[in-house]
Image (cartoon, rainbow, N blue to C red; front, side):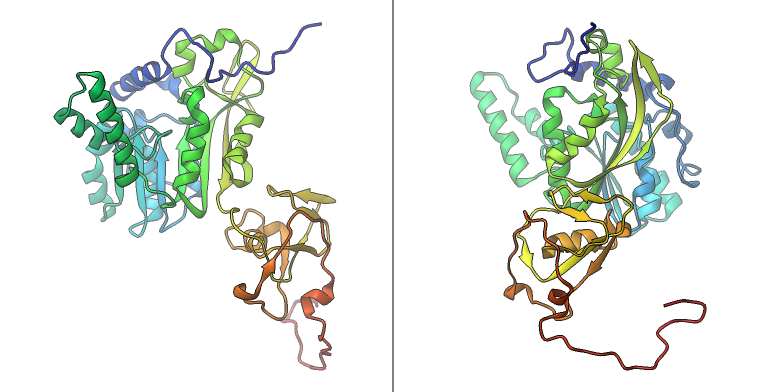
Length: 401
């Protein structure tokens, strides 16, 4: 019997024969100088947003999906690994003058290319709402341009100077963070997360979570695989910089969001046909969306959620069980998450608020660990005894009650 490997993905203790960051940086620096079609999957972008983009940006920007289609007007967006700036300049049109786009990249050549067209794009749009900053996407607190300025004035020439350098890094993270906590509506990325070193990926997802506002969301297009890459794949630097060796296994990709604290994690698009097949492993593009905001206290305000179906029952990311057609008792936090206009659940549930509002300051703690069905009388109130005797037609013409 052939033994199937289930844990080939590199771990923080894995030793590779090459430096991942240097390999990726060199490959994409060259990609900024000369177009490399092998670095991207064929991608169709929504609308006509690419029509006003300079041809050089289109030719030298690499991706595997279109996370831009899930962003709205007026939002503040961070693009991780923004490269030549194609996604940023698409989003500059979508969020309009009231929104803001921040592209983050570690590659100076790509940053120069993206910044080169800021003035031209601002003239075309009639407003300026893009910014390109240097940083590592797994350390969004550290502003590398400011750190570089400090290093020029304080070169590290001794062990003692290393301590000063580390202290300055800590100061910048705390006092002048590149992307502050809870500051953006959406984080997007297009085929970049797989390029991060395995030992940094948990920190990467934590940083995405940190910078999002409560209720914000991540929309990530990346390369995933149907099984763990083989040792041969992992030890090929060309396959790492080519978005293959660092690909997430499909199930693990979603679990990374869950472990970071996100809720409502969903696959928006998964390419049916693989982009590449190597050593029998299929690699394809997948776009995932996940939300921030399930943290906080649970308060009882007599609210209910009815799951519409079609499944007999479902479980959310906090372990709440929702039985089809039943009035399930929920806390105020869960009720808002489920019923808000931007909720990933809103189309699948019916929210039932109490007839008599319970002010937050009067609300008691609610035990969310129970699978409780709320009696209709709890919603209406124990003194409810109203009979509707109105003869007014409650329906609009052409509707049935």
